[in-house]
Image (cartoon, rainbow, N blue to C red; front, side):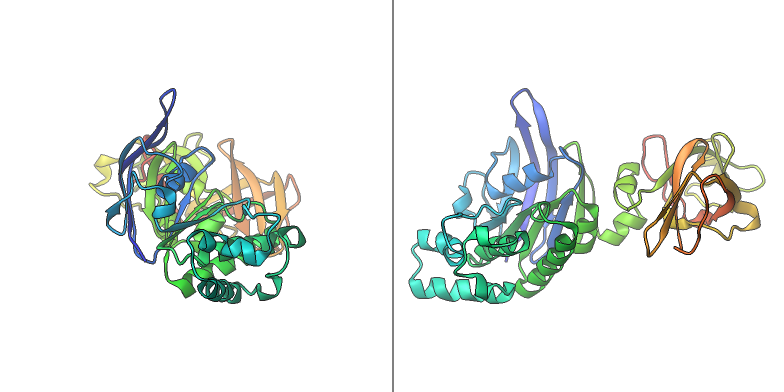
Amino acid sequence: MAVVELKNVSKIYEGKSRAVDNISLEIRDKEFLVLVGPSGCGKSTTLRMIAGLEDISGGEISIDGKIVNNIPPKDRDIAMVFQNYALYPHMTVYDNMAFGLKLRKFSKKEIAERVNYAAGILEIEDLLKRKPRQLSGGQRQRVALGRAIVRKPKVFLFDEPLSNLDAKLRVQMRTEIARLHHRLETTMIYVTHDQVEAMTLGDRIVVMKDGIIQQVDSPLNLYNKPDNRFVAGFIGSPAMNFIEGKISAEKGIRFVSSKGDLTLKSELEFPGGIEQIAGASVTAGIRPENFNLLPTDGNRLTVKIDLEEQMGSEAYLHFNIDETHCIARVKPDCVFPIGSEIEIGCDPQSVLFFNREGIRIKR
């Protein structure tokens, strides 16, 4: 078990392309930490620097209190699981899992014990004599996990390990990895671009953009208390709706959208008093589930339905507010033809507000 710490770590490629920009982060002992963000945000580069597969351009990386900047990957006591499995096609499952231990000159008895232990955890005992070509994608990923488990590393690193699986297998393997973490009680760092994976797996989530950490927090805090507009829009599916407008102090504190289509008339409390925010241009962030079909008198809005998506367990209504595309999540039995006009509402207390710089205005 180990604490992994990054202090002011940067990665600059030739041409001065800054992939990771002076990030500091502590991954706690036995924690499952997820790095998430869009393609090119620096999450995989960060993982590869921890593994030693990428040299760092500045800063320090330590594992269990030991600085590992100049220590080769094989001596960092980590195990990495890749998205392409990286199995040797000519070897059996047993030999694939045992290969790293043989290189380290473990005894045959120790190797057998470790391989059988990992195979038991992953329920692949009956696959040990097969070759990778005889396995399904999910089975190959289990073998890749088993190869990591047999090493008994201080830290597990996962680089988008489920991206090559179909939707059903992804869900199944997410469950397997969560169970694995609970059983092994070791530090795990997991990279994904899929925010659903991040929300369901992580004890904490690191949201990255352009090589910079935007927020590190629990899944629920990221969803309910995002630090900025980027995090608010990235976490959640369907994404948060953003509507431009201003705060007005007339007839109580209100939010009025730019074209006046939406007015939230509830008393909204802001730090520093209304004089600090009145007249300010802000962005209102509304989660799809916070729209409702039972509007209160003060906060109702008539919209025209552009599209309805039936998902089985729920439905998504598409419409415009101030010519801005919005989505509401409603019950599946709410059926509205395209072009129909309906009244919707929104509880102002559920709305998040962001200033011109995109920072959430705390309430």
